[in-house]
Length: 253
Ligand SMILES: O=C(O)CCC(=O)C(=O)O
Image 1 (cartoon, rainbow, N blue to C red):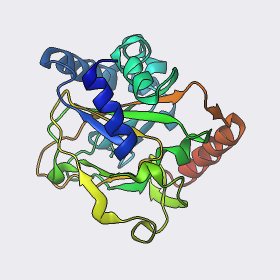
Image 2: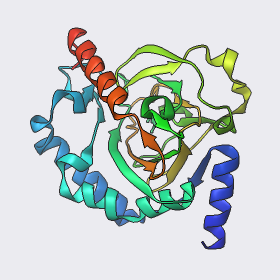
Image 3: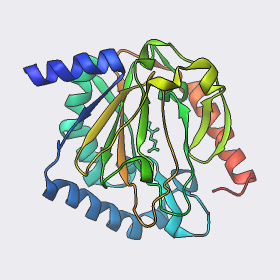
Image 4: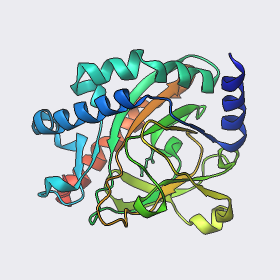
C-alpha cells in the first residue's frame, strides 16, 4: 500500500469516512455523466419499478434514484466490478470485498427531500457490519444543493436504533438523531465532479434537500461488502418484499 493510501485508510478508520479529491479526470466523469444520460433515456423504461424512484412519480424531471445500475448496463457493471473502485474498497476494508449495488442519486432542484440521518449498515444486515459505500460526485456540491454530511467518528458507535421514514429510497432513519448523536461532530463535505467520498457502513450521514435555484446534485454510489461479512439474505429479501408492497400501496412506485 502506498503512503497516501495508508493515510486514507487511517483517516477512514478513525473518522469513518475519507474524501479523495479528483480521483477521476474530466474526460472520465464527463463520460459517466453522458452514459447516465443515455441510460436514463433508453434503459429506465425497461427497469422494474422498485429500481427507479421519482420524487413525484409522474414527473420524470424529479428522478432521484436508480438501483443496481450494474444489473442493467454492461459498461456500468465493468466500472463497478473491474474498475479502480473495487480495489480501493478492498484497501479501505483491509481485505477482499464483494460488489453489491451501484446506484444513481440526484436531488433535483425544487423537488428534492432531505436524506435522513442513517447508517448504511442498518439496511445491509451484515455480520460483522463491514462494508464501504463510495459516493462519486458528478456536480459541484455544497450546503446549498444538499452536500453529504458525515458525523465524524460515528463508525465507532455501533448500530444505532432506526425507525421508519416517509423518504422514498431511505426508508429508515436514526430515530432520535440529536439524542443518540453529538450533532456538533457533523461535517458538511463540499465536492467537485470527479471527487470520491467513501464511508464505512456504520458511519452516520445525512444530507439536506437541494435548495439551489437550478443546480443538480448528481452522484454515483458504489456499495461493497467485506468478503468475510455474512449477509442475512432471508431477512434482507423479506424486508425488500415488504418495502416494495408498501411503496406500491402508497403509490410511490
Ligand atoms: O446522496 C444522498 O443524499 C445519500 C447517499 C447515501 O446515503 C449513501 O450513499 O449511503
